[in-house]
Length: 238
Image (tube, rainbow, N blue to C red):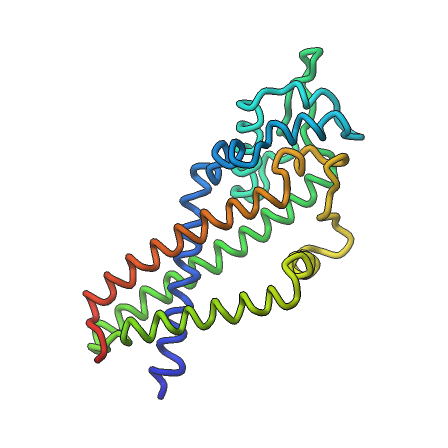
């Protein structure tokens, strides 16, 4: 009873969160494949359309794709480093002068994102340590891994339930609800393209969908590999 309703659910939950962290960290080292997303989503055209309309910044439409990739990379590195350097990210005007990419509200928002990522890292590391401990315990106690079919059915059922809830409520409503819950009151998190080069650079939320697909794909790969390894290590229940 304890193994079925406590040990294995905790085991697989920690596994999922730990592997999600590993997947996120690996993608972050490559700036979430932004150049590929840039080409796939035609961000050059998007930037050319909305950058001239920005009410706070000038000349961004004259910057090159390589500059856009660099700027996104610096944003990615900053939020992965507790927000360090966010205010120093800049681009070059036609006059040759350097100017900050983001205004204060954008920097505050990305600092909130960086704080959230810090919490994710702490949670993921804790789950990783617990998962390793549970693997060691299962190996020491000669616990058999549940049948792979049962594991797959459990995850598919959970995924289906989440999908149904999101579709029933509405993806946009869920997206807004999530932001309201995780970000501090009074901190702006929604930006129109005309008010934010950060949002224009990312064509938000499109770039987030691209990153989510990459993250989910990598997570599934790591999960399958780890499940195979666990099956070899612990054996499988009949």
